[in-house]
Image 1 (cartoon, one colour):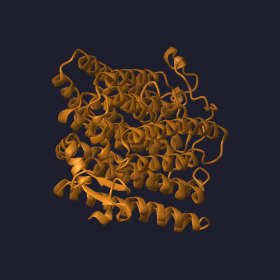
Image 2: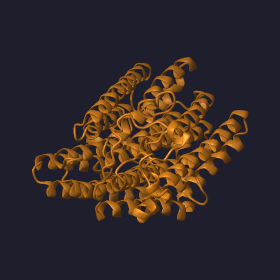
Image 3: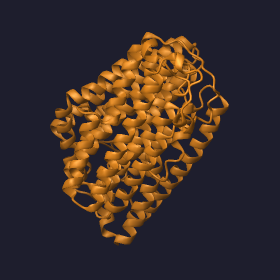
Length: 519
């Protein structure tokens, strides 16, 4: 079983190398990418079952025991992040293949797309299984290099500008991260997460707080929490639909995952509850206020992405089994739903010729199936019962009530307001783009519509494009996954509860990495 863990990283990297070699053979690249991600998905499913039944799996790479060597760790939290990420990457890949077929690969050039996509996948998986900070940093850098390539596919001016912003912010985040690693190594003499958790407790609380803040600052940029989220709404919407879907669904969750590890394993004694609750409050409200002011669907969803990160930070701040259970469930829910909605928006753009609600209309009649796909995703993101979004938020609110402080109740109110405003923003999209007839679009005047902000890159043109069965099928499958989150919410919550209990037990993590005792 242990031998499977390195494969989640090495298979995509090997696939990327093969795809690069066969740059002039599109069908070979597609085959290699599909096989690579299918294998990783199967391995992730096996690992999830294994760690749930037998406990945490660790691998000492090259046979070098930690802290001298690299250790890979898969517990319940890592396993579910691996499986959900692999499923999303595979679904989006199928969508991208369908888009490449009908567009003749103008939007996502195959020779560039597949190697970069597989390197991105390897970086994600490496970050989730890393048992030391430097290996996690390597995973982040793999993400950065591949995401810059994917973000600028097509070489348009808007994408290059967005790519420059993204790369500058990401490099700053990486500098903060590597600086924090240097400080932690200087203070503890190790970068192995399990050993840091023991040695950091010997330091004065002031030193612990400084080290923790330095690490969280780098992760906060990755997670796009307020006030470090300003870059996201301008960067993600410019990319092709498959790229935007992956970025929105997965990349920010790497930062959230790292924050969970920081709070529950490395810096358990540092009082983070109040600072994280304040950050969660502003992330919730600032993000959703930005969303309700957008006319462009992709920018609107990008702002809702920021706001819903606030729910996850809320759960991390409260801590305890109930809050972490709800947080893990909500992370899984949001990865699936946000990815699905961006894919559905990609279909809307192709059918309607735009993503601006000021120029869309009549899509319910023109493309009823696409309308249903978007509608189901919107209901789930908005938190309508009995969808998984509602269940996750109820779990977080319950944890807040049990925590019982006035700040928790303020956050519950902010969370409820964010949910209502999310539903309002998405209902407005439905009313304008789907329910309004096409004949009403021309000459339509509304003070509310005129007050909304269009995308800076919006040219005002409407240009429809062909969709393929593969694109619609991939989006349908993703919507099906969002519904399965609701149907199987009980077992998923049960798994999340076991994962939360395991994450809270620091000694369990340390003993898995050092079964004979830490050095």
